[in-house]
Length: 129
Image 1 (tube, rainbow, N blue to C red):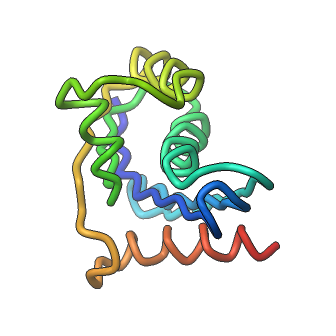
Image 2: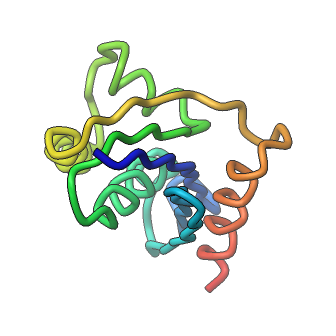
């Protein structure tokens, strides 16, 4: 299986409010940037959406490491945190995790990590579009 590294971030102007998400996909020597926005959403929904949209870009099953600064995502997906909100998105993410072998890793946000910073920039720019 191909190995893909994904950095994601979600952002919201107000919570709820206009939101954006960004993702950077790294495969071999290629870098792909994607982003999008929603009019009325929450930060957590944007964090999960970024991962979903990134995984949906993959054309075949892959070994994936997702780096996110969302403790919420890591807690829900790896530590058994109770699912009380965003159930529609988490179900979609669960289905994608059955297609791909996904490992979730937390990275400290706004701490100089090149690709985390880029994902954040993409999410922020998406809000303004």
